[in-house]
Length: 246
Ligand code: URA
Image 1 (cartoon, rainbow, N blue to C red):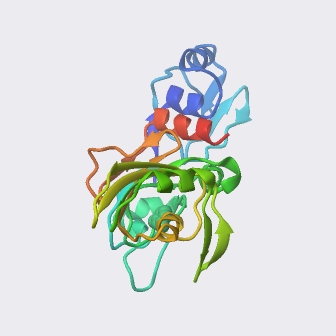
Image 2 (image 1 turned 180 degrees about the vertical axis):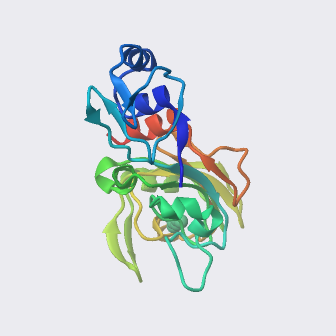
C-alpha cells in the first residue's frame, strides 16, 4: 500500500507548520527523506514507507481516511457480516484495511448520511451522546401531525415500548406537510438510541415509512451522491465535524 503526496503537504498534515513554514524548513535543510536532505518541498514521497525527519526527529505518519456515504436502504451498518451486505462492502477493500469503521448506525431500511472513518476518536465524538451532536432526518410517517406533536418533541418524549423505556432529549420537529395517510417532516435529535426516531414517532401514534439522514452536526449530505454512492470527505468537512464535536 502506498500513499504518495507532496512533501510539504505531508509535513503540514503532520502539524509541522503551515505550507509556507514547512517549505522554509525544507529550504533551510532541516528536513530529510530516507536520510537525504530534501531540497524540493514539492517532491513526491510515499507517506507510508518514507522516513521523513525534521531536525533529526522522525515523523510518525498516521494515515486517516474519512468517507461520506449516502447509505442505501437494505444494507447493514456494520463492519462485516457473514450473510448480509454491509456498508463496508460498498467501499474498496483499502478502506477496511485502513481500519475504517462506520461512525454510528443507521437502520437497514434507513438511508442517507453515514460517516465512515479510520479515526476512532472522531467516530466517538460523532456517536457519543455527551457531545450532543445534532442529527437531522427527513421522516415520512403514516398519519397526520400537528402542533401538539411539535410541542411534545420539543418537551422531550417519554418512550416506553418493547425495546425499553427512556426519556428522549428535546428534539426539533418541523412538519413540512401533514395528511391523513402521510406527513413529511424534518426532525433534529441529539442522541442516537436504538430506533430513536422511529420510536419517537411511534410514541405519538404514527409509524415511520421512510427515513433519511440529511445532516450530522454542520456536515450536510452531498446532494450529488445517489444512494450507494460515496466520496472522501474534504478537509473543510472534517474540520466542520471536529469543531462540532470538540
Ligand atoms: N432513528 C431511527 O429510528 N433509525 C435510524 O436509522 C436512525 C435514527
